[in-house]
Length: 158
Image (cartoon, helix red, strand yellow):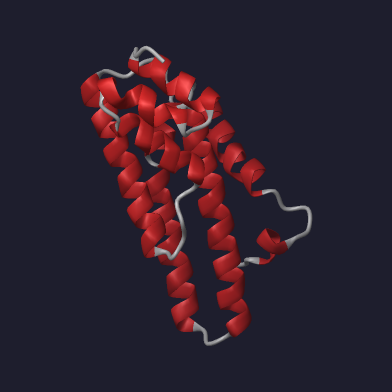
């Protein structure tokens, strides 16, 4: 696998990930959310492919390149995931729990890679896990715009 494109000075990971979404949107209009749902699985496939490449070579530069690439892809994936989550119009209690569980799964994948879950994703999880009566208190310590968006999604007073 050629990692050189990911190290180019003009490489923008977010543009690369968003480009994948645009292709999916063009191929199947209205299915962007379904495409986002498979993002974690696709990330795992990338990870396996990178790991297989590294295991076959004892080249330190490849490991550093792979780490850089993987970290960049992971950060862009988390940002794109946050963007998609924040576009959800409403969540019932069951969907709220499921989304929090899905985010936990992604966090476990990131942890297994030695990467930290983004602060925004951690904040979203905290707001999703907050009981309705505790939401306002939880939201006080977090960015107001994010709290307001999640409150509206969950149909909670903020």
